[in-house]
Length: 621
Image (cartoon, rainbow, N blue to C red):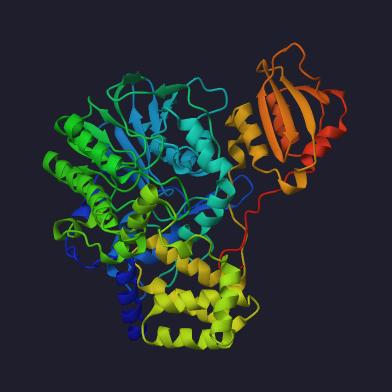
C-alpha cells in the first residue's frame, strides 16, 4: 500500500504541476482563523427535505477529525479539515457567517430592523437551517434584503429558504446576473450537472479512502434549488446602496470567477467581501464541470483594484467560501498574493504560448514562484495549475493546437478501435497499460485503458483495470476535484451510472418568457425537424407580452409579436398566463389555456423535442 501511495503521489504531483508540501504544515494560522468568532454549532445532525431526503449530513465529515491517513495527501487533508468546520461565526460585530452547511457560506449582516442575507447557499433547506441557527443566537430578525454576489447556483439556489413568498425585501445582484445564471444553470445545465457529479464526487462515499471534500467546501447540498429574480442591479464600481441601514459600496468584477460578479465593502463595519474572487485556494480559470473560460488577466486586475479601493478601509476580508482573514497587513498580503497568483499563470502561459508551446506542454513546464507556493491559499485544491494553464491557452487560441493532424481526428470510440488494432487487440492494450501502471506511469496507463474501454465497453478486465488506475491517481491528488473525478470514474466503471441527485428545475419560474423559449429551442432535434413547419402565436395575459414562435428548417425561433400588416396568420394562437405556460412545458396539459386554430401544431413542436439526459455516459462510450 505504501509503495502504491508513493507512486500515486508522484504521478499526481507531476500531473497537477504542484509541488505539494512546500507550505508549512506546522502553521496553524488558518485553523485559528477558521475557529475565530465561533458562536454556535448546528442544531441537528442532518438537514432533511420535506420528502424526508437528507439534503445535508453534518456527520459525513466526522472522519476528518483524525490524523491524515496514507490515502490522502497531508495538504488536502488539512484543507478538508478546515472546510469541515460548521456553525455560526461572527466576522465582526453585526456581520455573521453560516459555514459548513453547504459548499458555500451564507453571510448575515444586521441592519436597523432585520438582517440582510448574502449568498443563500445551494438549497432552501440548508439556507433555512442556517437562518434558524442565526435567529436562535441573535434573535428572530426578519430578512430585510438579499444580495447575490454572483451568478453561480451555490450563491442563490437556497433563496426560498430565507425569503417567504410575497416578501418585499429587495434582492441586489450584479448587472447581467439573470442572463448568466440562466446561461450556465439552465441552457447547459444538464451537461454541467452531470459533469459536476464527477468533480464533486457526488456518488462516492465520504471517507478517507474516497471523497474528502471539494477544496472550496466539503460538498454541495442536495435539497430544493430555486431562484428569485433580483429587484435591483448593481451596474458600476463605487455604486453605494443602503439596505435596512446597511451601507454597501460595490466593485464590479465581470469576467472573473463568474461572468457576472461583484465584491463589496461594508464601510461602517470595516469589512470587505471578496465574493468568490479571493478564497483560500487556487480557483478555476475553467471549472471541470464546464463553464465559460474566465479571464485570469482581468481577475488579477480586479484584485489589484480591490486593494487600491478598499484595503485601507477594512480590517477583515471575508468571502462566500472558507474563513476570513483579519488584520490590515494580513488582509493586504492575502490579496496581493491572490492577485499575483492569477497574473503569473496568465502571463507565463502567454509567454510560453508565444514561443510556440501548446497548452499541455505549458502545463508540464510551468512552476509557481517559491513565494507563491509557500502560501497555503495558492494551492490547487479546487482549481489546479495544470488545468488553469490549459484554460488560459484555450481562451486565447481555442481547441486547435495548430498541428494539422488535430483538425480532423476520429471521435473517441473510433480512435479507440484503431488503437486496439495497432496493439493487436484490447487484451494487449490492457496488458501494456498494466506495465506502465506497474512502472508508476499511471497517466499513460489511464490513456491506454481509456482506449481499451472505448474499443470494447463489454471488456470487464479493461474497465476494472482502469478503475484501479483511477483510484491510485486519486490517492495522490492534492486537488480535491481531480480526486473526485478519478473516484467517480472508478465507481461508474465498476457499478454503472447512478442517478444525478440534483437539478435546476426549480429555477424555471424565475425565467423570462424569452429565456423559457430558448430552453425549448436548444431541445429541437434538428434532423428530425428538417421538414416540420409550424407558426404559433402566444399571448401572455398576466405579462401583456406577445410572441410568435416559428418552427422551420430544423430551428425554433421567436420574436415579439406585433400586428404587422400583411403578416401571415398563425397555425394556432394560445392565450394563457406564464404559470400556465410552465405547466404546458412540464407536460401538464392545456387546462385554462385558450386555443384558436389547429391544436395539432403544438404536437408538431413537441414531437421534435429531445429530452436532455442527466445521466449520460462519461467513462464509457
